[in-house]
Length: 542
Ligand code: KIV
Ligand code: ZN
Image 1 (cartoon, rainbow, N blue to C red):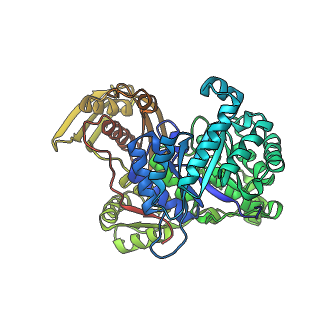
Image 2: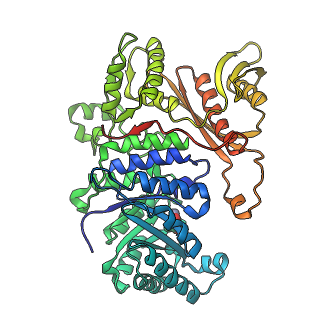
Image 3: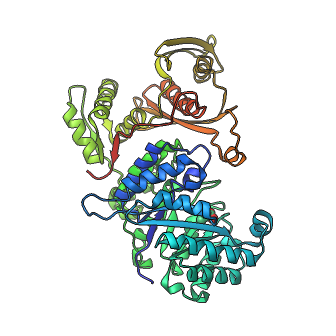
C-alpha cells in the first residue's frame, strides 16, 4: 500500500486535550475541528467518547458537522478512540457513525511492563482481546485502527503476532505508538521496518506512527518511521499532549515540505494555514507557544544577529530554509487609523482567513477603534490578539468592568477591581499585594470567592514598540471542586484551567486572563448551568 502521500491524523482534540489545563468546550472543539478540516487534515481524532457523555456528544457534533459536506467537497475521516471493550467501542461508534467517513480506533498495551502491572494480563489474553474487539469494531465500521500501546517498549516478535491477529480480525490501519517517548530515531525506524517486513498481511493496511516527545525526539522518530514505510503520522497542533506532548503537526508537515527532494513524501495540508491554526489552538487551550518553537514560534522567522541580517538582505536563502509566507506568516501592517471603517477591517480579516458573524465583527471593530486611538500601526498580530481576547473566551460569569492600580517604589501596590457578577450586579473590592498583578488577582479572589492556585503566568509583547499590546496567559489549579461519586470520573476530572487576555496595558491583560481562567473554573463547579460557548467564528480560507 505504499504511496508517497502521508496521511495526517490529527489528535489535538484527543491526545492533545489530555494535557493538563488544555480542556476545551464542545463549541471550541468544533471550531478547531473545522479549522483542521479546512487545512486539509486527513483524519481527525475527535475525542474519547467513553470518557464522559460530554465527550461523546462533542465527538458526535464534529462527526455530523465537520464529517459531512453539503457540496460534495472532501471531508476528513472522523475517528473516536476506544479501549478494547465492547462498551467503549459501542460509544465510539455511536459518536462517529453519522460522519461520511467514520473510524473506530481501539488500543490495548503490548509491552511486558504494561501487561504485567497495568492490565494484569498474559500475552495470550491480550491476543484474544485484540482478536475479539477488533472484529467487533469491524462488525460496526469498515474503517478500524488498532494500536498496540507502548509498542516502543514491546517485544517486536510479540508485536508481529498481535498485528497479524489485528489484520485478520479486520483492522485497516495499524498504528505504532512510542507511548512514553523512549525510542531513538534509528531504533524506531528499525521497529517500523521490522513490522512491515515480518507481519503477514500488512501490505493491505496503512502503517501509522504515533510518537511522544519525552526526550524531544517525537518529530525525529515520526520522520524515521515514515522513511521506513509508515504512511500515516499521528500529530497534534503545537505538539500539545500529555507530559512533554505529541509530535507537532507543523514540524512533520514542514519537514516533508522543506526536504521533499530528499524524502519524496508529501501531505494534503495547506501549509499557509499552519500559523493561524496554531494560534487558534493556543488560544483555546491557553497554552502559549514558546518563542523559539519550530515553524510557529514568534521567533521562528526572526533574524537578530547582524551577520544573519546582512545575509538575508543579500539573499534570503542564506539563512531561510522556507519562506514565512509558506506557513502563513504575513508581514503586512494594517495602517488604519481611528477614521478607518468597519469595511476595511472586515476585508483585512477575510484576507487573514477569519469570517466573523455580525455580532463578533462589531465587537472586534469596537476594540479595533480603541486600539487605533492608542497605537499608530496595527499589525495582523494585533488583530489576532483582539480576536483572541474578544472572541475566544469561555462562558462569562464575571466580567471586568473597571480596574485601577497604584504601584511603583513608594507605597503599597494596590488594585481596585470592579466586576459585573452573574446576577448583573456590580462588585467592587480593593486589595494590596506584592505587585499590581498580585493585588488585582487578590481583589478578584475576594469578590469571586472560588479558591484556586496560580500555577503559570506568561506575559509577552505581541508586536515591537513601546505602544505594543501585551498578551498574557495564565493557568490556575482548582483547590476544591465538588467531588463526583464515580472513581473513574474523579481521576479523569479536569482541575487546571487556562485563560488569555490582551491589552496595551499589561495589568489589564493579566486581569482579563485571570478572570477568563476563573470563569472556566466557575463553570466546572456546576453552579452556573451547562458549559457552553457560542461558536461565532469561522477560521479558514475565505
Ligand atoms: O500514546 C499512545 O499510546 C496513545 C494510544 C491510545 C494510541 O495515545
Ligand atoms: Zn499518545
